[in-house]
Length: 118
Length: 111
Image 1 (cartoon, rainbow over the protein chains, first blue to last red):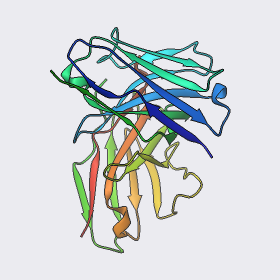
Image 2: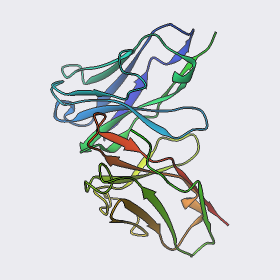
Image 3: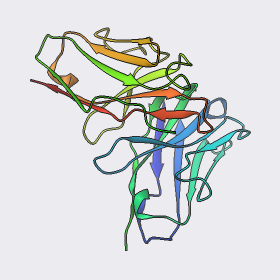
């Protein structure tokens, strides 16, 4: 059974940093591109970042470019999102999602809440 | 990259059919057959309902169908059921540097 489990969310002050993790199981992690997608409270889905299976290709939404860094460790079946210079508008539930075609996500984690507030 | 445009809400009675539109441009919806649809119930993660415009993943009811014409994709739910009440989002591959874009989301209400 495919499972994606996010962790690392929490309350952080504006300007602070946080590192999210996504533990994958039940499939060959190293064969799939992975993504972070977020959802602000009461708002829609927003794609944040993508990383190819071998980390050769990385993409970011304009809203997080230069502040967030996506990475993965295929030996540990894990996906990460390092978030720096956090802003109030980064407050959201962050989901990791498996990319099975061009930007189509067949499995999602349960999400982890990041709250940026003083 | 602007979000794809969806109606804010769509409603229907049990047993009826409804259609949700998703309008983009020739750089996303109109240019690629990588349009997908997701269902999200409150407090839950999104669930893939349609991929590559019209394909259903295993386990998704055949009451859900997808199509595309020009720059607009559509999701049709036939035989509407109470459990279909949820938020629905479209998504498309795009030629922009971000490569992916979501729709604004549609709340489906079963009357």
